[in-house]
Structure formats: structure tokens, C-alpha cells
Image (cartoon, rainbow, N blue to C red; front, side, top):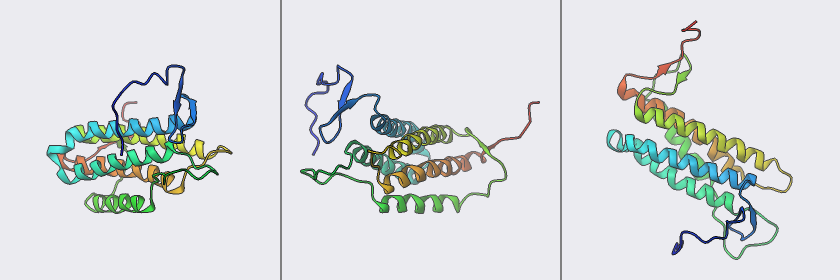
Length: 193
């Protein structure tokens, strides 16, 4: 259980922060950047939910589950795998969470017309916010892949799959949100030449 009695601890005043293992790393460390960007994705989804809460309770419920999953992902990234067995079982993203995203993507996509052009971010407020969350999640994915490529760092396969599927989910969710306002805003190549 998490208990937060004090919000400021002053332990980060010298530019370091603690991982779940207690190890301190610089705040610019790639692992810190990775889970910080996952947190940023979560905040962007929270903004999107301002628009989905009243307009689409089904989509909003999916986004609520994703927000909780993103805290799981942050906990996963915050507690790197080491050769030493921790005193507790670290929280890890599971394949079942990836599978749920795929099921929800397929269900939403089944209600949409096939795309014939690239989509511009926009349309409804919900769709625009979901596109922003999508681009932030793509940055989180790039950072996580870079972290996983480091010789001494480990990022679990389910975590990498989850962040990859999340951007797909957010893309389809933006299209799903736009179906209520007449559809997607499509790119027209060379339109303003």
C-alpha cells in the first residue's frame, strides 16, 4: 500500500531520484525519462477524459483502465530487474493487459470505416486530446526501446508490447470519438500548394 504523508522530501534537491529498488539515479537518466513520459501520457489521457466522460461512457471506461495500467507500467519501469531478488514481488505489466488493449482496439475498429487517407489530429475535442496522448505515448515507447537497448538495462517484453499497443489504441480511439462528429479530418496531400 502506498502512503504519502509528506509530498516534499528534499531528497531530490541534488538532481537525483530513487528507483523502486532504492537506487538513486540522476533525474535525466533514461529510465527516469521513460517512466516520466509514461506519466505524461497518463496526464494527457486524463485531459482526453474530460471530453469522453459525458460523451462516451464506454470509451471513458477503457481510458480509465488504461490510466491505471499506466501506473502499473510506471511501477514496472521504476523497479528494474536485477540479479538480486527483491524483498517483494515487483509489479510488472502482464500479457493479459496487452491482450485487453488488442481486444478493445478490434472492437472499436469494427465500428469504423476503413481509412483511405492519413488522419489529421483534430475533429472533436476528445479526438484531438487522444491524438496528443498518442504522440506522447509514442515518445514514451521510443525512450523505452532505447532503454531496453542498453547493455545493463532490462525492460520486459509485455511492457514494450503494452506501450506499442497503447498508441494504436489511442489512434483508433480518436477515430472512434470522431464518428460522433461526422468522421475523421483527412489529410489532403498538396492541398495548399
